[in-house]
Length: 211
Image (cartoon, rainbow, N blue to C red):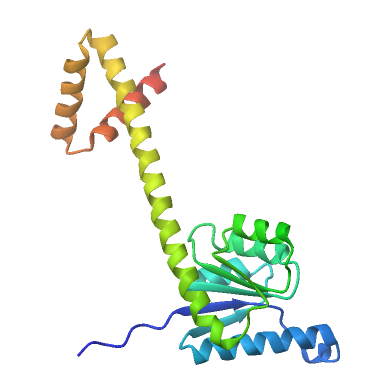
């Protein structure tokens, strides 16, 4: 018998309304938005692990909680909030969904550049929440695949450059042909049970150290 799928663990970042602020109409509206969002998430089967303010401690709290997704509920300009989110997800990327009333193109562009997976304007209707989050998660996974491929390509290019430099050093110092220098590199890698690029990097490091 298959076990039920694990619920998506979500951290919600929004304005924390204190009892003393209940008389403020704008904050009261924000509090109602937050309540509607939480209800929609719970009705859709998500696990809300925390509701946090966008403050100095946010990066540390997110690192501790390690959620699957971050949802930002911002009534207006979310740039200050996103700065904290960017710091919080710098070392471990996570899908970010932003619900906001800010319809300006500049704010949307800034949010997407900061790594937001979905920018939703006036979209807190409970029926919309699950489809929006599904699309955001799929988009994030696709972007992560592309980033991983790009990182791998850059790594291979860097390794190739190091190998070429190490070959040049062996050719010059040992009066070897390119084929002989490459064969020596491969032999050294096999003898030391190391990657070719690692052996090449050691040769380059010694050359830089000795000048």
